[in-house]
Length: 263
Figure 1 (cartoon, helix red, strand yellow):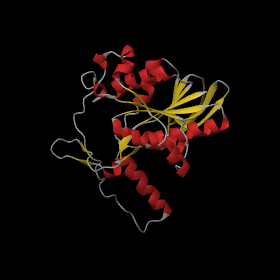
Figure 2 (cartoon, helix red, strand yellow):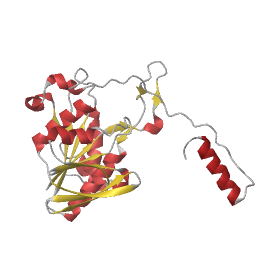
Figure 3 (tube, rainbow, N blue to C red):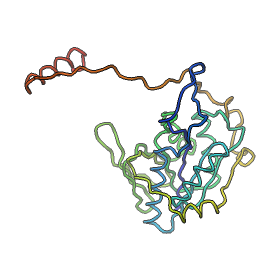
Figure 4 (cartoon, rainbow, N blue to C red):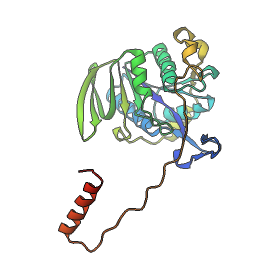
């Protein structure tokens, strides 16, 4: 069984600032990390590998050359191989173009199971994973809280509003992981040494051009435009009620909810 885990190197959003003139992210001096949901996907893949010794885990990342660092961290965690999809032609791609490019790379390397994060913390669109599945015309299960493999199928506990679904799908398929799916393990010293001794396969435009339409990748091939970016706004100070009995507190809360037309 060949498992492919798609990851993204993202800026640590706890330290991101916005340029007040351009409303764009200031990335200079901001440390980069593996997207948290993606890291959960790595851990889930490694657990499947431990239960199925014949399985291999390949980590795939689309990004600039410096994304090599994120891939080596994944290798140090225990992944077998790493692939970097990188090229100037891919720069500025939106979620649609990104999914098109990554799907082409995955078709080239082959897979049985693809695991992606639910969404990236620098965009929060939750679009790339499902779009990859659509590009590849394979089943997809999103918002995975639990994941296990049985024979040629995956069984997923899928988060859904105030309940959950249990979904079974035959491989090949794609699963998007929540951060709750698995707590990522730490890198080991031996793993770090091994990671920097391994070669990372780089796929550029020339390697994938037979599967790509140049008009549908990069900035010019991206139908999405970001009009404005802004930081999370602070909420107004709430109302604190004190000295009420239990019944009075309930009445006050119900009255407020009624005032706001929430009940």
